[in-house]
Picture (tube, rainbow, N blue to C red):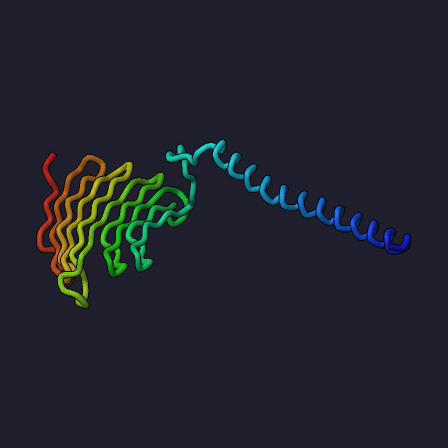
Length: 170
């Protein structure tokens, strides 16, 4: 063999050895990096199963179809909170609001589907009064009110005519 052939063969062997070192280093790193990830994953702290505090402006609990069944949020003017409960059709059935002036609770249900009006029970409390109202689908109403320590009962016809009023004696 000629000397030139030996030099070419020697250069080729050196290139193959360099390529082999790079390949060995690459393979070693490709095994080492996932190993580090597995070790880090095993040493990681597990996710918290209890949250100490959750702060949101509005929280909705929805059914699988996306209908909000329970809504907790700030009131209309951000002066208090409110809770609204809806049926599976998204119709509002109960709501409770609280603000600096007082608190209100209402329950509602139509007498018949697609009918006008609904049966409603409402309760309201403020610094100067406490009220309970029962309203029928045609707007007939029974109201029990205590304002400034003076109780009163009212009965109203569906047309808004006062049927009975009883301020209680002192």
